[in-house]
Image (cartoon, rainbow, N blue to C red; front, side, top):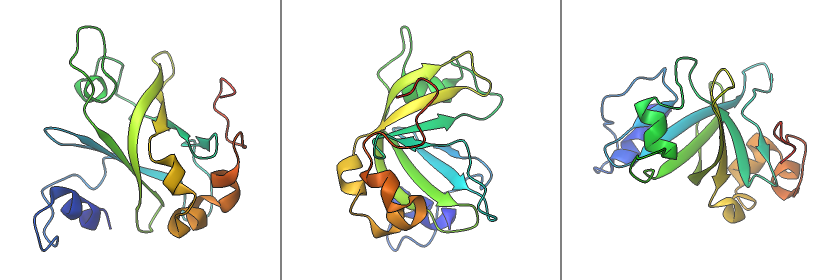
Length: 158
């Protein structure tokens, strides 16, 4: 499932052979972009902390436990003091064990460096199209995509 998404990102037809990647990492770094692969719920229906809010226009995401604000891949995604501008970041979400759904481009809204693990609230740049995605409606529920404030507000109530 992740292999199929990675093959498409790699962009070499016939999209059957992906580049080498770790199937356990939710962050796939490319030279000029980063792809986030995020589970939103478990196989048993347990909801994870990766929460969509503002009608799916934002998502709270938690980095891997060893990442800090200064980790190279985090700096690559969100920028930082004296760092080059962030690279494009794209998002794929799924229920654990199911196929990934492409959610489009992300831009960082706010970084919470004191949280463990590090928390980033992302703006979903393609949120307007997400409400029409049947796959995403099934995954998140149409009420999340249509609500402008919604359950799933982040800790700052955004």
